[in-house]
Image (cartoon, rainbow, N blue to C red; front, side, top):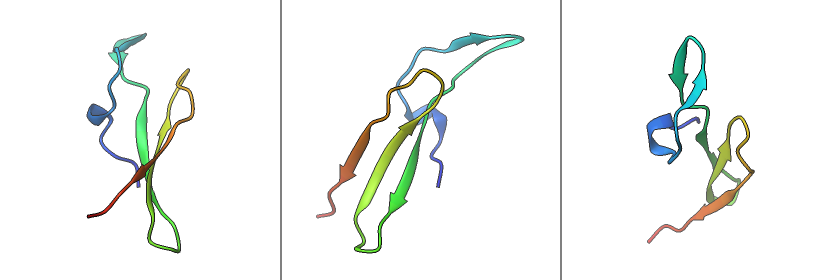
Length: 54
């Protein structure tokens, strides 16, 4: 599931005709119920974060 791009902290890129955000997070759930966010977008380094459930 792709999350709202507004959640991803970034500067707006100049992609004519409008300034646009290119990054977002992908929310992934594994078979063992572990949750991860994965960053994706143009010129954005891959980063995987684990979400710990209480």
